[in-house]
Length: 572
Ligand SMILES: Nc1ncnc2c1ncn2[C@@H]1O[C@H](COP(=O)(O)OP(=O)(O)OP(=O)(O)O)[C@@H](O)[C@H]1O
Image (tube, rainbow, N blue to C red; front, side, top):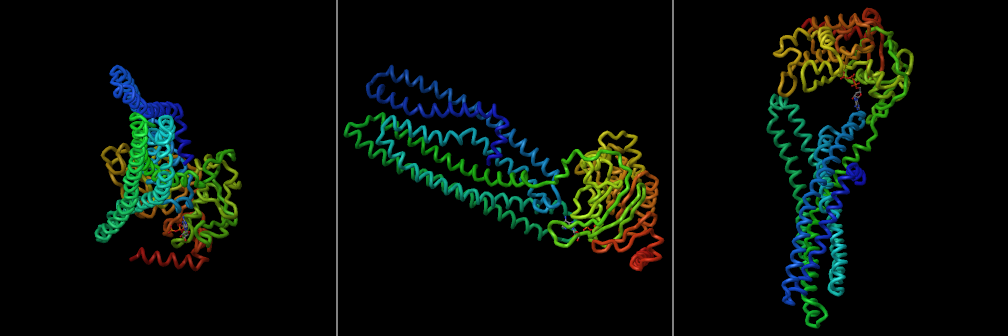
């Protein structure tokens, strides 16, 4: 929670002004019963209407000041809470950019979205409430007690004695509330996961006629969220009448004692009225407390969830600077490289050795799960080798400045992702300052230019929700254009030509061969790799055999079998 308030403290000037205005409101609230006591005792009971008019005027005056202070306080409270939320979202977003696959395993996409939106909103509400009333409530209780003691000690004592019971009860509500609201936020994550899966897989759901099943799944998650929400709110609803009941009993006791004191002549009517007034206002403050506790419990649950993101240990290499910055040639070397995913015991790749000269094309072939993508991800340091060394131009990649290195390497991942925006913007995403000429050249090399020119607005055509949708093969080619536009020294293609027809793929590969860059290409079909200088045949995280197509076909029986079966499949 401390971190959340540190965010609010960035806006300290607004915060101090807001808090000062809150104190103004508080002081007015504390003075009001005193003024009323004076009006009754010195004015009404003495039939001195001039005193009534003077103190009545003062009462109206300070109430107007409190009213104005309240409005201005709201303005500053909104300023601080919105600003803090804005900064929190920025910091979380930045942190997520550094996330490793381990982090993504811990935090699913829907939970990240809920945490960056709904949880931040809860904290904003908390900060707003804190600046509006949170401090006022405890200060009013303390101030009210002090003032009550200045009015009449014995009667004020009754108020003081009731306090510990009230506070204990509120503390109990608070601890329960934090647990309940944490559960509510988790259920919200769950619901968001189902919504996201449904939106992403809508075609699949329709195709498999799983609409009813998915509806039931959604309904269950929704009901579960509803039930937990109800439970948390019931707890809060229960708190309010309980506090009211307690305070009403206290007021009854004060009235009873007050009547005795009046009869004995040890108290004046105005004093009893003032104490009752303080008690009533304290009762109101306690009921505000229950509302605050709800906001606080929710806020605390959300603060923990936000902290988990901000404190997560991200990819240290992301921000690492100070290493070698140089234009690489593109030679790649793997020396006894092993990589084990944190969540599984067995290595995904083990003791991998190979070298590729700058400008060579290396093909990687292997059954699914054999470690091809893992190997590829180690080259731009998206993952750090568990042991062994990855070299570029003979230098370990740890010694390079990561950003400078990644600038010269282009990866086309297996799962293509296009951004909302125009076709041109999607290609330029690879190089911010790419000229139109460079964009077109990259598109031509990726064999997608001709298709783009048939689109309604050519390169300016919008993609995404309100724009056109590309086919699988078109998406692959567009993301290859995005990778080529930055003129990389190393190009990594992770099964990125799988959706292309044989002719287009052949044209694309021939173009890539002419480029002055090292190409590492993962593919399922031998036909995609035939022309490679070297093919690595992978099996269960190991390189079974390496060599060019002709050599492998001649010497390796496993390669021969794969080739044979693929030839037969093509013939069918
Ligand atoms: N993020 C991850 N966390 C844990 N295990 C993973 C992760 N990514 C991959 N693996 C595991 O590592 C092994 C190698 O996966 P990898 O994706 O490198 O294989 P691949 O050869 O590229 O497969 P495919 O051809 O199906 O894409 C697999 O057993 C896979 O289950």
